[in-house]
Length: 196
Image (cartoon, rainbow, N blue to C red):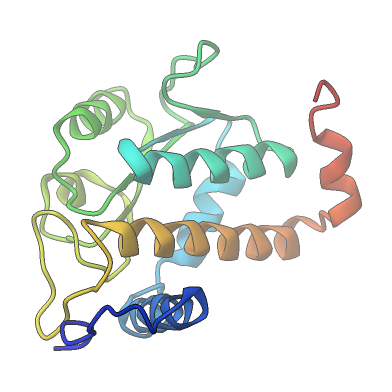
């Protein structure tokens, strides 16, 4: 099994560990399914409002994407912020959940679906409850807390690999959106907060 046989030692340093981590991330991207990414880009482009949701460290990676959507000029919000609006038909909820079963995020997905918003989901589990509700699903094949991968065990603790890969997926989506919208580094900086 890839990753299971790494022996941690005092001889290994940050450079060694970073190579292992980058190798694991490369493996995730090799076996993931991004065929629905163009549809997710269409969903984002056509949405009047976009709300993003994720729990824990997955939520932090998702929050970074919400910020970049704002820099791209989209009307985007992260669940939990005081300014999150109501959503309904014509709007989009993007949920991130490795397992697709996180109860708090599932509840949000269900409410958004009941209010006729489109649902985008990035998950490692197509057969999850969220996977069955979502309109557009991206399969990010990293181990989650409920769905290990055959022949692969990450050397990193818990679901770290999933969170890393999610952040890189979202940053890759930003580049796709820049190409679609014609936004540039400079135009995005113009929308960045000047209160820092």
